[in-house]
Length: 161
Image (cartoon, rainbow, N blue to C red; front, side, top):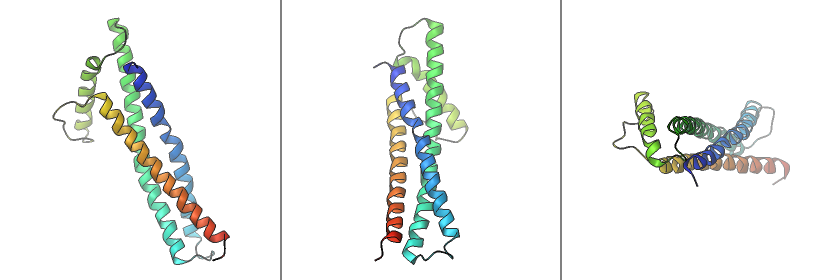
């Protein structure tokens, strides 16, 4: 698979994080509304704790969503730069050597903005993609936990214990 195709697949996967973010935001907003209305609802203390956990998980999911979105945008920018670089040099498919200067430049810019520590050496593209996908998996895990907690809360209200 070509480097540009790999980048395109990873960008596409990372953009799914926006859909997870919307779901998480909806669950978090519902939990906040229920917390604000808890005086009118008959909720046990453990149910209030579940609502607080939903809100906290929503905040963690939002943090991951921001990171995933940033990575998707950075990979998209790398893909555009790589494509324009290939167009001007009349090369065929992009290679790892062609992207290394772009990655070095990206690292120096991220370090200048204090978003990362100044790297000792430039990381290759594949470890970066794997790291970004791990962030997406963590975001998905937070949203799944939110869904499970919400389901538990709703079932506890619907079924008398």
